[in-house]
Amino acid sequence: MFRKNSLSFLEKFMLASSPSGYEMEAAAVFRNEISGFCDRVETDVMGNTMGILNPDAPFRVMLAGHYDEIGFQIVYIDDNGLLYFRKNGGIDKLNIPASEVEILTPRGRVPGVIGKKPIHLLSEVERNRALELENMWIDIGAETRAEAEKLVSVGDPVALKSNFRRLNENRIMSKGMDDKIGAFIVAETLRALSKRKLHVAVYGVGTVQEEVGCRGAQSSTFAIDPQVGFAIDVGFATDIPDVARTQYGDVRLGRGPMLCRSCDCNTVLGKKIRSAAGKFKIPYQECAAHRASGGTDAAIIQLARGGVATALFSIPNRYMHSQVEICDLRDAEGAVRIMTETIAALKGSEKFRPGLD
Image (cartoon, rainbow, N blue to C red; front, side, top):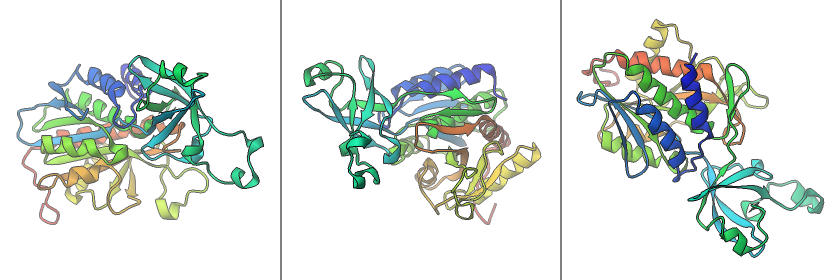
C-alpha cells in the first residue's frame, strides 16, 4: 500500500482543479511533490511538468500521465448575472444539470451551480431528452451583470467542484480521476526509481490538454525525444451493470492495472512489462483496447520523430467523465510496481524492434 505521505499528496492533487489549458493548480502540487526526489524538475511553455532522474544517460524513458480534466469556459454573462458556458473536453450532457462548479479566477474560486428550467415547467418532449448546454447556465448568486462581473469574467475556466474522498481502504472517488490518478502514478514511479540504480534517464511528465487532443504529450515528447514511452491513463471498468464484456472485456476494480494491447503498444516492450509483472508476482489485467489506435497520450508519444516504443497502462475507472469517478488504489500501486521493475531492468541498449528483438 502507498505511504501515508503519498496518500496525502494524492488527496491534495485530486482537490486541485485543472480544466484543459488551465492546469496551474494541479501542476503546482505535482511540481512541489516531485521536487523532493528528482534530479531536475522543469515546466515548459505548454504547462507540462517534467521530473528527471539520471539526466545524463543517453537512453531516455518517458512516463506520461495527464493532469488536465474536463470542464467548461464562460462565454457570456446576461443581465440577470447568469453565466453561459461552453464545454472544455468530452462532457456528458446527461451528468451536467444541477452540478456544483467552481469558476477559477485570478482572485480565487467562485462557487456556482449549473441551472436549468425546473422539471415541472418542461414539456413532455423536453423531459425525455438530454438538454443542450446552451439551455443551461451557471448561477453564482449574482443579481445583475455588473455584480457578476465583479467576481468573474468572460473566458474564465470552470471546473466541477472538488470532491475527493476515500470510500474504504482501497477505493477512492473524485472528479478528475481521469487522469490525475495517472499523473499520481508517474510521480510515485519517479519516487520509487529515485532509490534504484538506473542505466537510463527517466522523464516523468504530467501532461496538459489531453482532453482536447493530447496536445501536451505532443510537445513534451518532441522535446524529450525518448526511446521508450509509458502512457498511464484510465480505462473502462466493466464490473457494473449494462456494460457489454463481449465488447469491452472483463475489467474489474482491484484486480490490477490494465496492460493494453493495440496498435499504439510496442510488442517487444509489452513482453518485458509482462515478464517483470510475472517475475515479481504483480497482478494485472489483459486488455484489448476498445479502438485500434488513439484516444490517449500513448498514440501521440509513439509517433514522435522516428517512432517510440510505447506502452499503455490503464487504471480501471467507473463512471468516467463524471463528478463521481471511482478507482482502486491497488490498481495504481500495481502500475507503479510493474513500471518500476521494468525500467530498473533496462540496460540502455535495447532496440525494441518487433520481430527482431
